[in-house]
Image 1: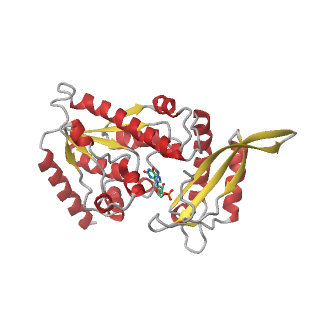
Image 2 (image 1 turned 135 degrees about the horizontal axis):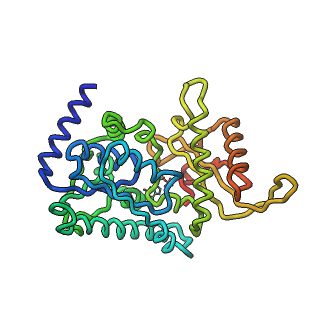
Image 3 (image 1 turned 30 degrees about the vertical axis):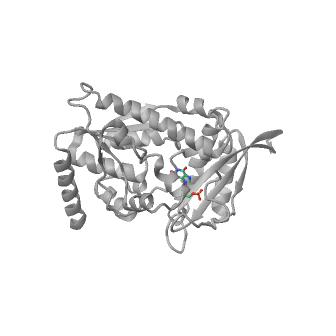
Length: 333
Ligand code: XMP
């Protein structure tokens, strides 16, 4: 609509005035905020923007390819994809404490990003070397980091909107979404041509599957979890609630599979199996501070369970998490 069209024109002019002919780097995570920021800045300055997308090996199924298809294939933006899975998994080997895992993932993320950004800021790497770091900070993040709401509130965004990074890299900060609420960011994203499914995606934590595999993270576990999670999400999109006409993906605020590194016995054909377990988690919440477990239809749970057990070799049992927050948290770690 024209209101959004006006807003985009204004935001684009503002970015152009701010940046001039200088170059900008942005850390693309695949999440809503960094995606919309990237699309907006790209609309404003085109090839003066370079996105850095760090694949830490803890992303969802096909997530990296989807980000590349959208930003490179459709928007023709410059994106450097860094495949750092081995590096992250290497550092995570033998580590099972949740906070220790978060620290390692956060630290490695900064390392990888800094090293890529360093190449782009070095004179000669591009025309002049980048002068700006763009971040998808939105208005609620601004309030959160000023308000000191406690440890978790700070931890949550510390991953991709890294405090202190612009100074360390000697870059100026560009935050074009700073005044927007989440629903405005989504509207803006759609108006910029990002697909509906991308801007209405459930939130995904920075440490990704790293905190959805209980205890030590192993490549084998990430592969199993990715498949199970993709089946769950696909069926949430497939099943509609008759009353509202909405899909169960739309009716839940966050949903995912969790990998439990314990084995249980099952039967398959003539044989006995001894395989891993996944838990399905789906919650409804308005603020993520409290949450109810979602009363998913049995038919949906049945379909997901049978698909996971039949299609994902290595998993022979599926459970549903019926814990509310508090006292449970949404994530299992
Ligand atoms: P919990 O598990 O605390 O989660 O009920 C509340 C919301 O925060 C997300 N979450 C994180 N996001 N880094 C993030 O970027 C983290 O370490 C992290 N831990 C939890 C979680 O997915 C939910 O949306």
